[in-house]
Picture 1 (cartoon, rainbow, N blue to C red):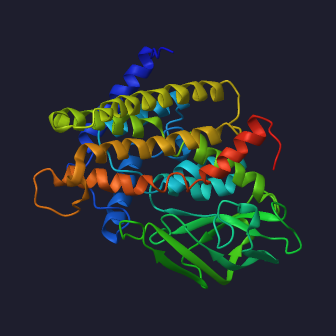
Picture 2 (picture 1 turned 30 degrees about the vertical axis):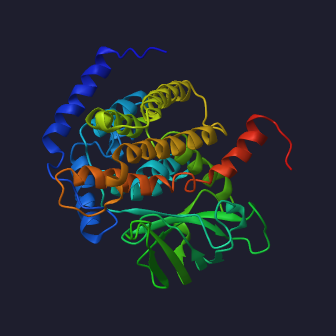
Length: 388
């Protein structure tokens, strides 16, 4: 497969490159899992929105540029090339935003999408519960209808960005007599509503990247219901498709990581004792490029009217395991030096970045649906194998 860009796409790339060169912060922002870093990343989201770069595929009326998916991939390549900050509002712009575009009412789109693109409102994801992690159909958190409102009771856990976010979107059981994937509704909940309690959960690095959320008679307007009552499962599956299939982890993320891995190899090649590491470096680079080409193919199919189906599970397994392999190889190159978290060594920031990336990569096979569950989906829905 050979990628040939049109003159218009090449001009678009240069426009992005020039804008990012002028606006990307010169100093690295603090982690968005800290209050200081979250606020700084929110300001960066506002800066992106000032140039209508918040989410380029969205219509201009909602703060986007009306770009197609190929242009989005070009934008992502330039974004990671420039070393721009990670997107703190990824739950909103990559997951909820596309869901609202497809299922939201005009009033909901007007109310939420522009504020999401501008960084004014930050979003957390509320899928998992104790006893309902990868098996979302086991959700028990209740949303009982009371006139024009829902009364929500229950608990969510592993809610990404919930510690500092403004809103959470999630699935709630609106039909108490229902079971499994029936009777679930997709509802948006403000995290400052009376009765909401957010408790941080530390990640491997000690920072609160996740939280558990408790709902005690939380009253939410029925205007925050996405789609029809009881239709939450099918809507959430569309959101999960965005998460696993295309938007959440663009190939540029792994292409840039693999290029940095090659640079690290070149710096440390004279210290390598295990020559198999060279093969691992080459394979990581090739696999990142293969993922990019596959994503371009998927984007082309979607632009011709295709839908993201169960093949998104293949995508999710691929990028999550690639992320681990890239960082494992980097730590092998760094050797014992990689285990030193704090040091005054000149290159410690590089070492810390690889170590932080390695720790985060361990969560990849878990979030967005565990890879074990994804393999079951592939076996049943793509290969037609019987359930055991």
